[in-house]
Length: 258
Ligand SMILES: NC(=O)C1=CN([C@@H]2O[C@H](COP(=O)(O)OP(=O)(O)OC[C@H]3O[C@@H](n4cnc5c(N)ncnc54)[C@H](O)[C@@H]3O)[C@@H](O)[C@H]2O)C=CC1
Ligand SMILES: CC(=O)C(C)=O
Image (cartoon, rainbow, N blue to C red; front, top):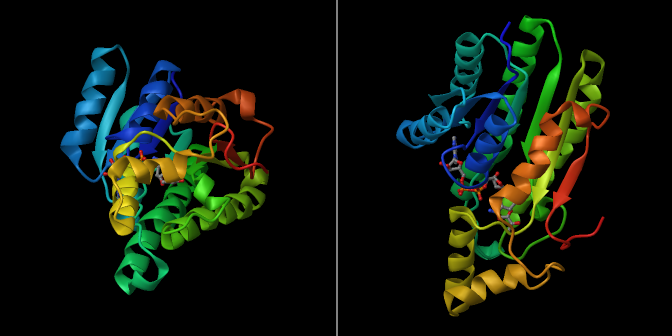
């Protein structure tokens, strides 16, 4: 068994996933970085290793169940243990409801919802083989707590992730496995920039208008940094959160109040 705890983060090549991988590495985890593009996750893993971490890059498409199981197995074999999975990878097409296509629906659900379900299954299998519990941490969103115009498909996947989190937490609690989700607000990442651009284009407005539509209701009056989110994930991955399960926690600077 490894000295360090082992965490796997999906979508770790940029944005929130990269920040989570960096933070967990700093917290002392051995970290597997998973993404569709090996060069991107490898570059982040190299940075972490150069900074004294213990990181490993794996190529996988989270929509593909076999890929996800192979990534978890490769991580377990490489580090000799497996303790935490962060099902972070996601995609966010935006469009008015009239323009949603069957392809948008299938693509988004396969990645956002499929990725969480396959990640949870693969992690549970690894915990079972290793004879211990673990932590499943899922990426939802404020858009999984509150409807956001033009994000019908994306938002519905994020509402579903809260449902999966609650359901699996009840199923898995007796095996020493906790399941929680983080619900970020408006985070400065390539995904959010693309959404803001697309919403502005649809309305015939400048790009900055798009971001303002999302940012105007943040009580703290600033957009989120990826590190605001990885601070929460660090807590959820640590033993300090051992008595918390089934929760979807907002980290949005005061935007959605529950
Ligand atoms: N940026 C934001 O404001 C918010 C983001 N989120 C959620 O946080 C998570 C991360 O978002 P960002 O970092 O903003 O996105 P991003 O688009 O900047 O990064 C997502 C990463 O996931 C990877 N990815 C996408 N599909 C994949 C697949 N099928 N298999 C493997 N990797 C895949 C991408 O290649 C990319 O590296 C997502 O689940 C997103 O829905 C939630 C709330 C707000
Ligand atoms: C991208 C996202 O999750 C938003 C706008 O909440």
